[in-house]
Image 1 (cartoon, rainbow, N blue to C red):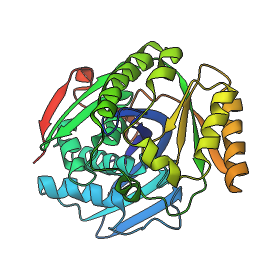
Image 2 (cartoon, one colour):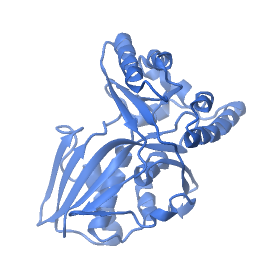
Image 3 (tube, helix red, strand yellow):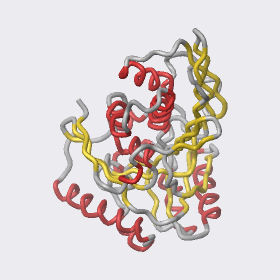
Length: 323
């Protein structure tokens, strides 16, 4: 069998008021090469996680691939993985979702696609449990999802071409689970209502490229007020971004990355965010200016580029049961 190469984009979840529901694919990628071998597992890692991420069967990408093999009851004798990672770990940029989707899609393609895209999402949900990163990592673009009572409904939405600015401060020991533990068990009804309306407006603003509307809509009352105090320098960096020309700034996922939206002056905004983080914390921040990714997971077998099956249905709502 030919080597399978899979490229998976980073993702930014929540997008302000769209808590656990909205996700956007952005142009920063992890690449996975997988090929069958004889009787041995080999994992090579370059880029993010090199020297720290495991190179055995506890690696999340390997575990994801093995989950597919187990699901279809087919087990290769051995596997070779070459992982080239550009998505930072524990950054709020969907590194875990990229690992799960990438490993599962690669294994599925190696076996000539026994699983549909929806089945891959359902299998990934058994591990991650949060589709707001998984769906855009697979499908690309802007995706709205709802995961309730073991049922996932998702739909890709239109999004205007634009660039975003991402600033990642140097914070050790940042964990999604710890950031979720900061959230309250209940919120005032008026806050929930405010977020519902704003989340809908965010999707319209992104579809139209309406930065003025995005400035009003991308404000949250459900998670950011509880998470921001745990990220040093975040208020200063967000303020610097707005002063430099950004129209909307919000946490990417649970942080610590900030994502800013602007029609222009992207490099200046990024520099301002980095300088503000360093002034507040004494630590450098990493900055990227990235396009919206509209391709999602891209697959190649040998020299041939392959497409996810049923890609023509991406803009139709899909409902799948996830037992």
